[in-house]
Length: 516
Image (spheres, helix red, strand yellow):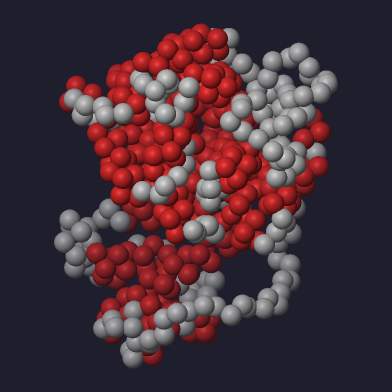
């Protein structure tokens, strides 16, 4: 079958490395998959399918430094997740059965108890049997925090199949914004990031696991993994399986372009996410250690985790070029300057130039304060009629008076600007049935948020003072922990941004019960 597009030049700046225990992992996972009922008689795979897919090679490339026992376990996890994907496809997607698929998925979290000694249901199929076995073998060596994160990522990964099934049933293709967001939330890469922690022996400390730098790192990693998979999977997913959750297809339909143009655009986005990963790893992750006073062991764990995600990108690309599961004709054939060196078929210095280099250049050459526009606004589709709150004018007067009283008109705004913004009009459209007092409060929040949105780039952006911006944000967050009973204006914090925020918080949260 001819390929639907020519594969673009991928940005792969690091060579993949191969774990020396790959053959042992192949033999182990073949025995394990047979014991779990995934091979002969499953109706999904025969042993030749497992051998051709070569998940041991995937894991040996993506986890090049772990020992044999860890590689065996990680390979079993990936064998399980790919079997689940194919099992769900044959059982619930080919003849769409949402009710059956949901019932099937709803049972699986029961095989991931926080404490395995609590017991599990009796497995009823190879997917349940595999998950129960893997969970018992993995969690004893991991912390409670990791267990919770990994169980959540696994559930999201499983329920992606339900989102895909809904789209198939509706004949619907997601738009690009929705697609990237949903794939980031429910795709397999956050789950893979959890296994990086296990394989690298590098658990991310709980106190920084949800920090912005590590969230950006995981999100950039996830986007790149998913977009790469979409390019290699397009032929199998779209032409064979009838899937419509594929980034190439999404852009092809949304932009009305050719498949080749969509593939090139997906690769440009993939490149930008890899470069975001590099920027975050170099500029935001190291200061995290200082800010949170991580111990040397914790710093080493974060560094090993970051390197593990980097290894996964290069190794995952190498495997995609070799596995029979994907569209990869001619990608590893022919002479190469690296021929004979393990894991270097993806590394070609030419891929660091051309489109990948242009993508990096674009992100670093923006010239601020240039004239733009005019832009022609499209005809917006608004299916619901507008209703305006009758208290609009009085709420505007009160909210502007409040803005002046709080000191927000003393520096970057003045009264004429604030009146011209008419944020009370926005509140009147958002809350057409609110009382005057409720509308005034709503307008106040919109005013404060808009002021803060202007304040940060003017005060901190122009000076490049990131430390001061973070300090300001921490002071604002601390105000949320204070007693929400309404204080008098005289007792409020002095800086206008904090004074107005504290006043709004007291008037909003003060009357509400603490539990809410």
